[in-house]
Image (tube, rainbow, N blue to C red):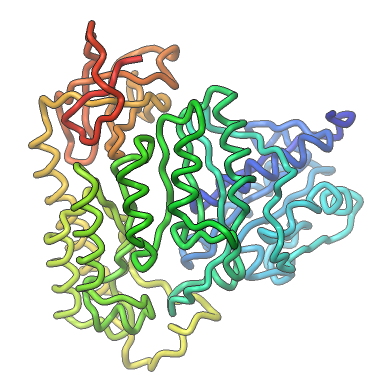
Length: 456
């Protein structure tokens, strides 16, 4: 039962899918307390920025946005910062942006309504303590996506890579109970959503004390109504034979893995404390592809990590070509206060101009390989799920099972539907397609982009 109306709230989200999911939790918590969500900050009594701290650039964007949003505040509205940047900086944020009156880390959202009330009463409120048991099981999120649902299954991380701030901002790894995850997925499916994405900092290291990630994939994949099952982000070390077998056996599991590599140099990987070598990573790729036909692989790569020399970078480029990544999130190294990488000898620092040049070459290499592979797919027919309107033009954005983006003409009534499309063109990163009408549906258990599932 929703309380009497208390005001309006506007939430702006930065960062990863876990942050998007957390924003849905926050909105659910505030809506249950009587707040109504609005889509523009100038109409909001409460303005919240849910933030990322993974790189300095992300934090600088938020600080700039806080200044911009100050103009949207009325005499009675308040502004708050939540998420990883709030956890990292804590009360320091109140001093850096004096119009901010609320700072809440990822484990403090249960107290959000009470903290908002304190802030609206004129008090500066912070909550940045960890709660190692918190999974927000009794909080109903207000889901922003009409087509897929983010399902957190694990919080925190125990890997402690030398460049990464996540253990500081999200705390140690802990997993939800399998039964609780399945119950949430069943509720999502009952509402008509057919695709779910399991979330965790190292999602495939999931353990609830009695079950592992393979068990979770099989249990979620068996939920009636779930047609597509994805997960992000896994760690290469945690793809056990059991997990790979579950991926291959469960029809709902999509033929796509986002597999962070970070570097193609074993020397750099050791300094990053990634706990695998280049050869280990390649072996993981081979094990995945040997069991899952038509598997698409995307990745994360950092250039300019302290000590990276020309040969290390060439090793990364050769790894990109060897794996044949379908896409990559690429970054220059960003030192984060409090991480071990900041304590590496200063003489290991890669000059900014060299790191920038390497990033440009890396992006060009990734795009060139993806463009060549995508060109070979033209004329193929495949199943797509229509997700939303594309950013440009009168086209709908769709997604194949192996996570390729396809733009098609159509109407709003197609959003959320499965269609068979023929790939007619590509920019190198996305496809254009046309809807194919088929009288005889093909089998559901398709395992590659070249075979279409039934049109819905």
